[in-house]
Image (cartoon, rainbow over all chains, first blue to last red; front, side, top):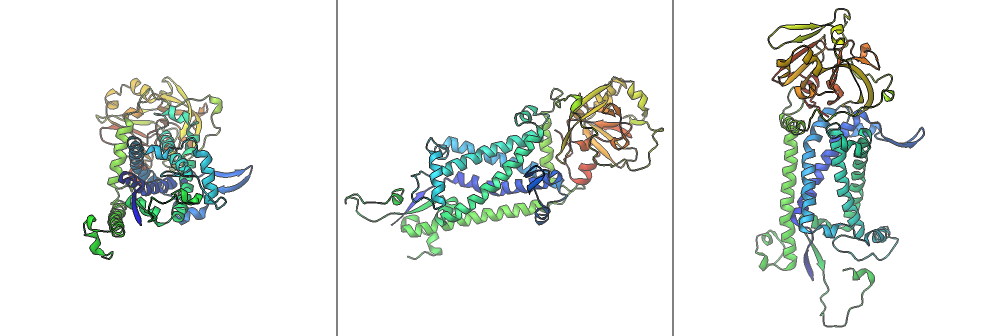
Length: 236
Length: 260
């Protein structure tokens, strides 16, 4: 027998799907801006391991010579990113959803077990609520990152009017580096998120659109002896 | 009853679990795709808005102007660009751009034309400017491209210049305009930013007269704005209650305010 179980409230689905294109536009317009002073790289001494970004990358996404366009879109869509983020945070606080999201004292130990499980190095995984420990950490971290992007963004947008904020992030140049690094963080998050969503399958994905998950329950009378289950099934 | 289009229009109470799952999924995805389509249409609409002469559409421009109203509210004479010791200033300072500096230039014949509201023009020579109290500033100069550099400038506060020449009525207007002698480059600046205590009519870089490529003999240094507004080699100065022309905003789609 199947059972329909509510998973994601409508508000959370809205915030999620609004954020997706808005963040994409912010990253795209951010690239148009970054190109005009593309000085960041990963390396040591005179060795560059990774340059942000190679010419082929710029050509592929038609980045060069679009600074003003990038700034215009960035400073328009920042409002949507900001308002949607604020709405999401307020909603999770007021509705109590935050309890399912914020890591608890077991999360960091359990997240490791989830990681081993996902990499097929461990058979069982720790019991979980709506989100597992790794998700709790990831989804809370992404909120901190969002706040970081808004604050570092403000710091480099108005470095004189908000000099204290700029100083807080180690100055104008450092604030720009953090703002950039957070963006790379979103891209990495996105890649892992997509892989996880594909691995989790249709039922999980559908829940982000419809709000419900379908659970299969065994049609056995409850009055019988307790059913022996393996660790994996006991998760439910 | 099978799962079919009919299922979608049947009351929930008459459906079994499988049909209910089918119905709820179909309805949710229907609205999901409608919204996806609306978002795609909205994006396409925005991308196809006719651009003004500055290559930015009216829709985007109106938001940028709103941003200006919001963030301009924070602009204060008390918010100052952080100052550094002169020893930290870059030598030589980075040179970025030569717009308005390309035409042949008669250094000896130069005077700044201050075009007053009533039509008469003041011609002011560099020596006259140098007679006014000198102010130095060492601050982190910020280019709209994203780089920044600590640089050391010397000159006369714009506010002091206004006072010394009795340009009170002109300074009461909303915008200041500056252009190079060849008129190839020009900037528009809101008056509160122009009157900010760190805005200089600048004639020295690192204690030396301005090099030609830094706008000899006189340039603007306005720390509360991106470097594009710090026009090199002032030819004309004028005042208006309407926005004065601005090269990067009018021609290239940049934000008019470009304030920091």
